[in-house]
Length: 249
View 1 (cartoon, rainbow, N blue to C red):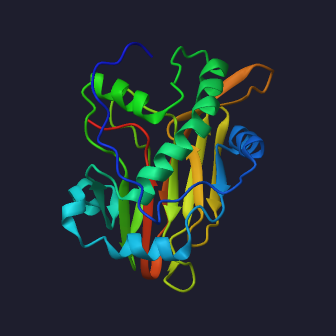
View 2: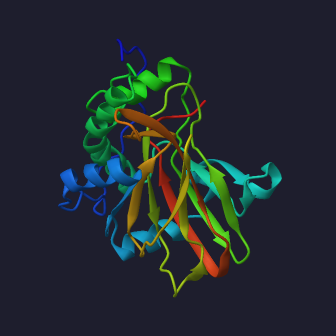
View 3: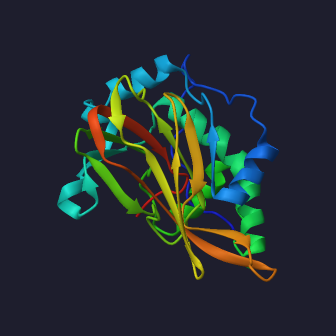
């Protein structure tokens, strides 16, 4: 990462419900990410915070665009990209999580022989995105109803990509919806693997956006490609927030 010329997006003031981070075992999270490509962050948001965020889905002034997934072959359902400034809880979480994840991202790059070195704070990294013309906020909120699903995909959005992202479940499984499991797959030269990740309301999963390093079968390190999606929702309504750390073109 080199000298940065563009100003980062405007900061939010800290609202009363802007969260800090629970006391997670970050060494354990790094180990699990290295082994599986994903790790759960329990109770990242309180249930009341989840309800407030989901209730703001109809407030179009908060968002820069809306995507109906079936029109683009992405699945069924819809999502909206937040505009800047982000809601205070998401702004706070994005800034609190990034410095925890940047050292893991840098370690992964070293293992995979990639030169990119991510700075320690989010605003510096966003300015680096802006130098490449990636000016639009990428965090989003997704809404699914019965029959909806999200095809396996990667959220890249431009040349400058942070290799980890976070998805937060805002709805409670079994009460607000059924089905709709978070799914991750990995693909390497020697095979494929799929995981279904169980989440409760307020839980988050941090996961690889594109590739991750994995032990080679004969020593060394190999790259495995990661994709994520959501299985078909059987009933109810499911809301999720996606915290993506790079901005988009």
